Length: 282
Image (cartoon, rainbow, N blue to C red; front, side, top):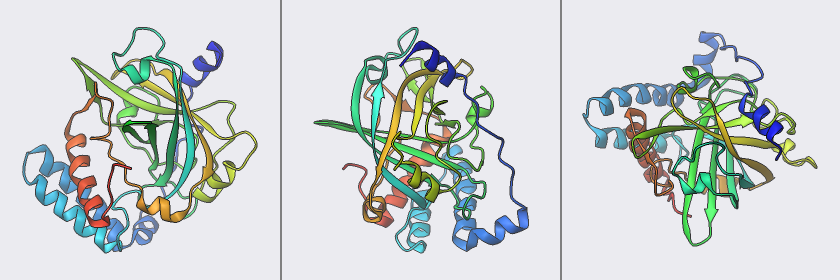
């Protein structure tokens, strides 16, 4: 990929700022399980931050997932695709993470999802999950949520309508004494992913498969593109239902997820997987 295209991708902003749906209409559409799940996230953040009851958060997550009849607690609506991750290497000083700094190409499993979920093309916190398959080595899972490119806003999940845009890991990862955030940025010349899961699935059938640029940054530094993920053919619903990501355990050996959100994600994801009988190891 040319230097010009990399620079363009690094400066990409979301197409538009998503407008929040009418509060009354939004809460009516969530349903009791969705509303309770959001309440659990808020309560769980307090519990995990204070060191009180991680096991309780995990049990509550499992109970809510069972109420979804074996579905996911968060981001229950989604589509799974075959894909490919191409690593170019990190521009500038190396990060110290071999997977990011060394060029390579990996088959991938990619999932696009809606967090609540809201209906159709309503604004929602959108999710992108990428699993890199590395032959005989453990997989690497990268999970990012719709956010913004600016340094302050990249730490917040932000609802929007379109699947093309900026996604951020929200939580940091530590390598030695440095902390890194990850992003997926809209590729300027990519096929558009649309405003709904159905439109995203249709986009992957185009001759030019949709792509998102993968990038890394410090807390307030610029995004540094290190690769791209391409979405190819859609996987069936059974495979989507069985798929379980682990953004805490399935990491490159040099990285460790840190912070309150990492602890909350660890407990809530474990509870959700337990209720589904799913394993984060393929």
